[in-house]
Amino acid sequence: MPRFFAVPDVNADGIPDLYAHTSSGSVRLYFGGRTAIGSYNTVIGTWTGKLAFG
Image 1 (cartoon, rainbow, N blue to C red):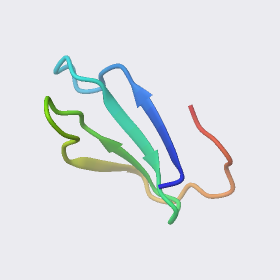
Image 2: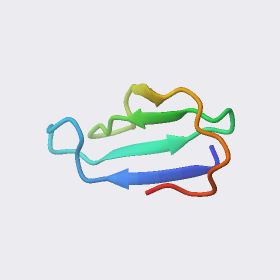
Image 3: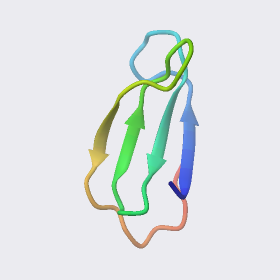
Image 4: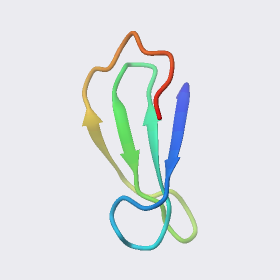
């Protein structure tokens, strides 16, 4: 994945979360876990032509 952006805590569980812009153009929100990155939700299906976000 070409770009990552960490955010304090999106789902209010006290653990930081992470946005990722994939090479296919989608933006995913990965939920942080105590020992590993958890599941993700695709929040934008196609986001192309951007060099950065955050």
